[in-house]
Length: 614
Ligand code: ADP
Ligand code: MG
Image 1 (cartoon, rainbow, N blue to C red):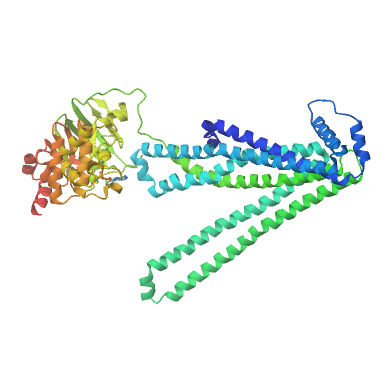
Image 2 (cartoon, rainbow, N blue to C red):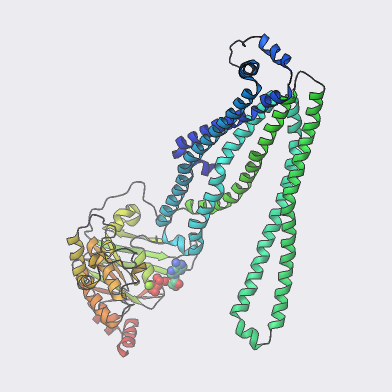
């Protein structure tokens, strides 16, 4: 809860204005209630003697105190009554006007308070959403293989929403209600300390009873949710297993199972409804009891005609007491809601607090351009930290500048994993990878990734225009830059044919384009970035033969004068690579040029023959 409160800091100005206007509103509401006293005075005190006595004392001496304020008010009020031109009806008229004005002011200020609360409430939620989204895009890929995507999505949306509705909507109450309760309480103490003490004495009993009930209500509601879940899963199984239920004549027994669960659930819901319904009459009765206590002891004070409490003041006291109940109620309500919201906040903070172990070094080394070689040295890798199930073992690999190294091997042999370590999507568990002799861990992640372009099997595009997808990450790119990149990527022609050309909206993940077109857009994106190092991970495997040719041409354009790590499914596409590395179950089984490997008669030859048959 404190962490959420800290989020308010940037909006503290607004929050302060909110509190200020709330306090002013409470004060006005208080004033309007104190009008009850002179009003009763006016109705009950019939004789003129009392009034004359008050005026006889003269105008009260000025001092800053509540007594002075009350006395001066009564002085003027009485002088109006005693004025032969004005009289009691005129005084009544004044009271009515005053009450209306005060209620008007109270509500104006109440509105101001809410007016300034809006930016606080929405601002905090906006900030949470921003930080979560930022963190989610910065966390390493490995974080997402351990978490369920749906769960993360629900944290980003539902739980943020829950915070907005439970915490933020109750936030004002947690600041406002205690203030109004305290202001009302102080007034009650001023009117009658002993009576206020009686009220406070009954408080613990009331609180105890109410929390008892709400706790047992919560228990029943949790049980109810579980039972409902069971019920839903039976319905689900019935629907999906309909064929089997019918084939085995199991309708009756299945129905029996359902009926039993349904009856249990209904019983539980009955209990819950009855408890919920108990809350309202109970709290009303408790309130009435407290009121009776106040009436009895207050009434005794008034009847004793003690100096401390007049009938009019006593009625005012009760009026103010009645005003304390709504904020107390909304305060306890806010308390429960915040408890609910904190559960959501914890889910969100578990994302925000997740450690990102792929981070910049404290003293990063600089690399302006790639000039010599990439080197994998005794690299082993396991997806689960501390696990011995290595996906890669003792990989030694050198990619000299300007050369093309190809990785081949069966699916699951670790090719993607090996390539992913170059842009530090994962760090090696053992061993090290270096560029020009500098370990990747000593480079700024940003600088490192600036050196590379990646084209993978599934083209990852965004629901935006063709132009923006190619210029992705380069907002300053000009139209010429983008068109040149598209031409190199064999994409310019088909883009011109689209409705709107470069401004064509490509749909979710590029759903309005064909697979080959999507892939050529990804290649154009890599061309525009113009990186010295290229990683191509099965860039053509998902395509049909026709578009594969177009994409392969585009790739050949892209690979010119660059250092490339290419993973290929179809061996024909990498025959001209400077070195071909054959992977098998996480280790390098063979390496060499195409011709060397064929004469080797090893795994490569076997794979090659298999494909040649197709
Ligand atoms: P390839 O690209 O050669 O088909 P991968 O590098 O994708 O192979 O996968 C190598 C091995 O690592 C596979 O056995 C796969 O099950 C495992 N693997 C891949 N990704 C993950 C992951 N995120 N978490 C755990 N294991 C993974
Ligand atoms: Mg792969």
